[in-house]
Image (cartoon, rainbow, N blue to C red; front, side):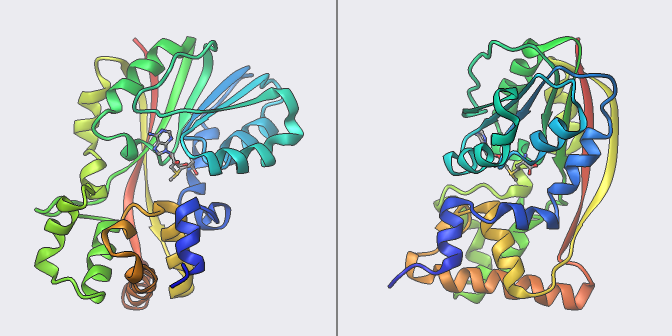
Length: 280
Ligand SMILES: C[S@@+](CC[C@H](N)C(=O)[O-])C[C@H]1O[C@@H](n2cnc3c(N)ncnc32)[C@H](O)[C@@H]1O
């Protein structure tokens, strides 16, 4: 059986420019609006397809070095294409942020949007790295998502996945066991609470300010959400089902989201925090 378009999309995390309009892209302007002055070096951690770097290069002619660190080679390739017009103002590096390597740059600004939960439980390594790479007076702007969490540690996307797994034949009460056996941590467990995060940050960085907004995801149809899921979560959850059921899984994710949209007027909503941090 050949893989469906959405399965192929999940493998390569493709389609993010479109999908991120539903949620993640809003973080970009929220973060950049906090910047004042004439930054010369900005490092974006988990830079994806380079959207934040591009917006920063457009806004700040002072920017001499826009640096992206990202794990996915597909995303780096897409970012390189997008940022080609900015020439040697840009450098992109493949990196695993759970074990970040030193960089030759000290940054006026370090940013990271919609990434931190993927680094759980090793976020502290990145915070130590950031503290070492901020130039004097520099700041780290970080967005973090905080879905409500139930007694299984499920919340946010996990809830849609639980419905979709049930739709493809897994008994609801078995779903937490399926996650454990598949070595998949619920996203609502990966996303620490704001208090827990404040504790994790404390040894390395000082909180200068913290803002909060509600991120609401709405969709126009089932297929749109299936593509959002594939572009955002890739195979993370889809790997829980055998390859011959994945097309059904993505379809069920889309249908679950669309049902919610019709019942509630939204698919999901959760608080997002913007942390403005400085070195001690
Ligand atoms: C939801 S996307 C956010 C991308 C971009 N920052 C944005 O706001 O649109 C999460 C990104 O983090 C990257 N990522 C996840 N784990 C990573 C790791 N351990 N090291 C580096 N990048 C990672 C993913 O490849 C993906 O591009």
